[in-house]
Length: 75
Image 1: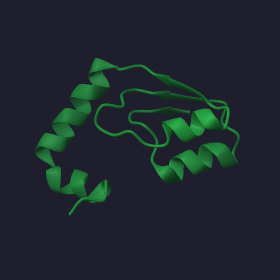
Image 2: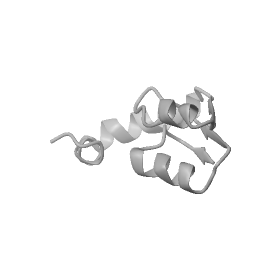
Image 3: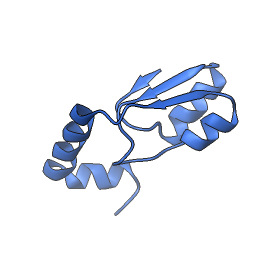
Image 4: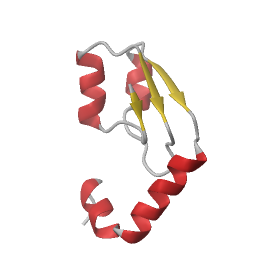
């Protein structure tokens, strides 16, 4: 599976359920999800630290902080 951010708990569970062997993450500075759990379950986790993904998320958080905070559970 390829994802811009570290997978959330629901996506982490889906990876386990559907036996995804490898998760490639664009960046994990803005959000760290279930990476450790995936590794514990034998899933290969690759973090690219991609500058384009970092900038994309930086802009999104800057322009839509209310959406970002709601999505990550902050009020």
